[in-house]
Length: 210
Ligand SMILES: N[C@@H](CCC(=O)N[C@@H](CS)C(=O)NCC(=O)O)C(=O)O
Image (cartoon, rainbow, N blue to C red; front, side, top):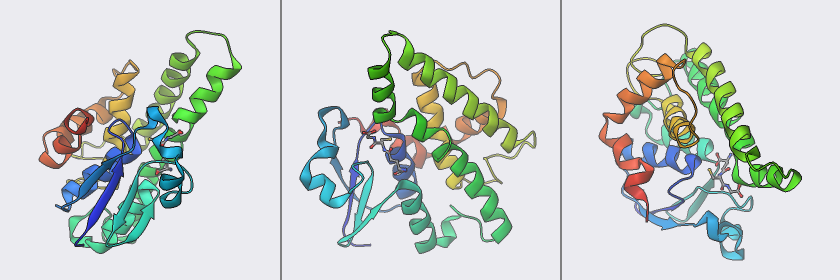
């Protein structure tokens, strides 16, 4: 990987997942900020890179990669020693299930264009906040049950995997919306443990905010 360009928005949790992966793999990359609030993801130039009009996009030596988890899985395959996906096929399935529980079941219904549509449909001033709190709380409750009561250091085992790359940005988002985290003992503990690691610290939205 000689020339790596990352199209990123500091508050995007899908981008945050990939930032953590790049940091864990110690990839040297240049960032291009795509300001979602200004509609920079809908310009013809950006759509040529990412036809869905979502962040993130990663370009490695001229090769364009989209979809955060497809990017993370690609990086995990390039550098299997980093353990983002475990070596054992059954363990790998478990890590994917935990990651997808966030990325496919919580994140899409709380995405910017979904919530913007909701607020067009209703006059209720607090609809956006109620929606976010409801679906994030519900999704985290299911994730907490999946992770179970076994006190492993991370979501799966004793080192960060793709599951933690999804959990941490989702917790950041939950706190942003004022979700009560009291019942999510394992999730909060894992988030705290990840927060001690430099790769996670350097990827935090407050650290990359333009
Ligand atoms: N499944 C996609 C989702 C990407 C995504 O939804 N990104 C959000 C930011 S977290 C986005 O670009 N939203 C723009 C919009 O909703 O219009 C991925 O994981 O890359």
